[in-house]
Image (cartoon, rainbow, N blue to C red; front, side, top):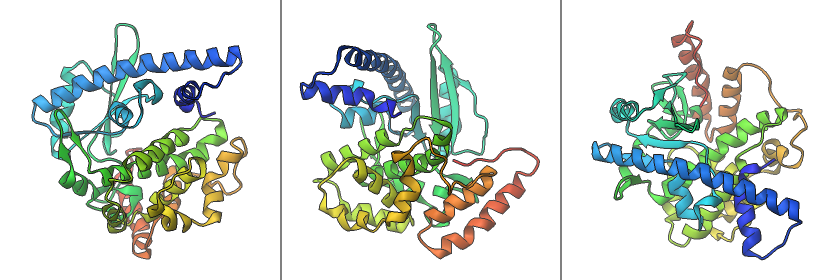
Length: 335
């Protein structure tokens, strides 16, 4: 079910000299090789695109993907990823999109109101390289900003990330505390989506994303500015989704960072059951699942993610206003 973990598991088995039955060992090896071939294609393209953006003077932050894999894992073949995610400043989005078009990519964006544009290029081999060009790390496109989970308190989070980013040779890096916040928010999005998608048997990414966070905490923890991390979470009203992601990570991968003990312990058991039920029984349709249009799901999820009643009171007006603006277009972005 958690197929994206297979390359990493295969590496850990080899590292520990654990021998599996022949068929199983060969199956793991084949999947690891196939993942590496795909990842190498993506990395090569990722490097070319970042170099082109850098040459054009466009600030770019890679999200997850090859750069994160190289930071956290001892070898690139351990961390599969399916596409290239690059974030540029909103005012540079059009220029960056032109660079992709000039590089042979096709714009396949289905919703121009989303927080990213979608591109793809078909190689001579027939392989498709998908790229997401982000103007913000993530968020619902409601109100005047792409708010994280539609929370009004998160307004300005994107500007905050850029104000603390540091330049590298070709690309920019988030402040380490901000990158951990981003990884937690990205995992929270997948936990919410997969609690529904799993009903239809869709394999999830949550455990791989949780392993990323576990490695960040383990490898960066001693040098991480934990005060800055918690201050950012509080500043942008992101306690609930960040705490949920760290709770899932601790459920599956133990960590020893005492800085997180009280924060994670505050995540109540009923919420863990609510969100993590797929982990114990992925094929069971959760009795609490709320069916219906994405708009209703978006309102409900946002209510659950809110830290403060001030955010909750603003959610419905923001969503209704956005739906009214899009009336008749058939376009609804739900992040």
